[in-house]
Image 1: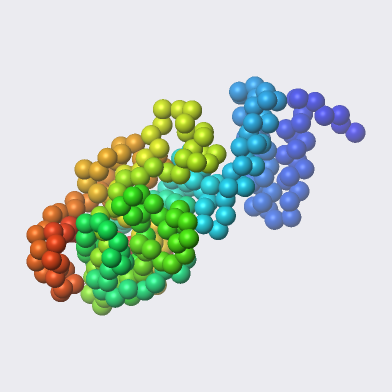
Image 2: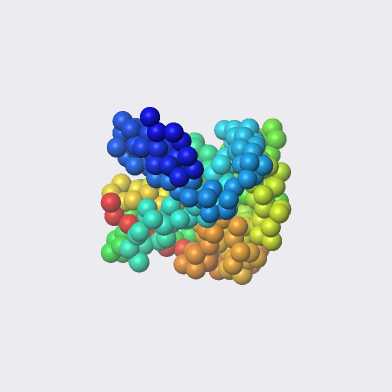
Length: 286
């Protein structure tokens, strides 16, 4: 029998978790043990600090539900989410880069026609986003499903608004035979991440900006291509250089050009001044 000491506990714990029946699980958990122990040794973690961490993790779980993913938010602000995205989506340089999914995506968004209005009359400056979906060779991708969602002009998503259960500022669009797409929404606003939970409490003890720049989320799926999770950011928006979740990429920063009342890209007409953004998504083949 080997008695546990500070010198051998890491070896003993890693060996136990290496017994996991699935080889990948065994590899991951054994490595997790080694890195956790190395972290504790590096900072000489005190019992008080350890207990504070356990309470923080408990509170993070308690505040999470089907609409609020506080653990995803924690991963985002620590930079882990973007690291995992970049390691797992090493696309061709010509492909549209991927970013984080974020904690506010919801399955089951309603389908809209070409140019359909996903803002459904909510206040804000009308914004049309148009462009094409193509492959690396420039060939159009027909039937690509663009799942789109964003915050309102107050910076809130539907899941953050009490008593709102219907779809709000989200929809699915399908590219046409020539790869074109068009959607109508309202101009997004830069916003603070939720600061009323454990993640917010952690950030308040730092000089980290808790804001995200104005953006619209996209999740694009098309047969024969890698799924693409990405954002479009408004050129000139605040917080582009300090995005709290590290999601900004220069290739995804787009001009929102002002338009006077006139015909709109889908063939309709807008009686008020509106904005237009153009972006061509390029998908990575499977």
